[in-house]
Image 1 (spheres, rainbow, N blue to C red):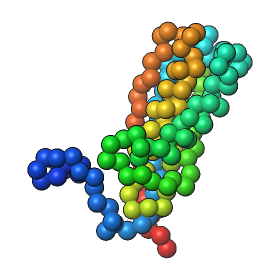
Image 2 (tube, rainbow, N blue to C red; image 1 turned 60 degrees about the vertical axis):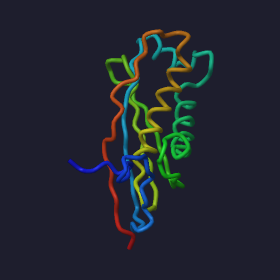
Image 3 (cartoon, rainbow, N blue to C red; image 1 turned 180 degrees about the horizontal axis):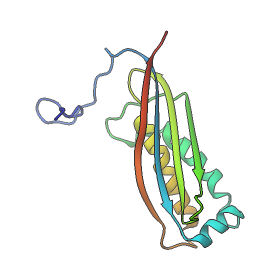
Length: 153
């Protein structure tokens, strides 16, 4: 098993020193879902939720969260992400919204936490905007689906 990188030799929490790592182009993609009632999805699609356009608000919330990840997650490096994108899909079953987020950066460390945070906050935003009409919502399956890095030419 690999050693935990955020724990020092004394067992104390420690921020990882990435200063010696090379700057690379990095991208991470995360996904998750929020399960809702079919009637809630109908309201979202017809923009009949009282708080406004649910998916547009969730997209902005997720992007804003990605930009603030270093302030939210202890020991996470504050990163100047260069791009964040969030997509929503309603499958034919009409019982959930699938959420995916990608985050990009050119830096010495990865951008996985930013993609995961974007998905999480997008889902939480949908939950917040729909909680008055759907008491059975569940946020599930948030996970990192890919991460890549490429040397800068």
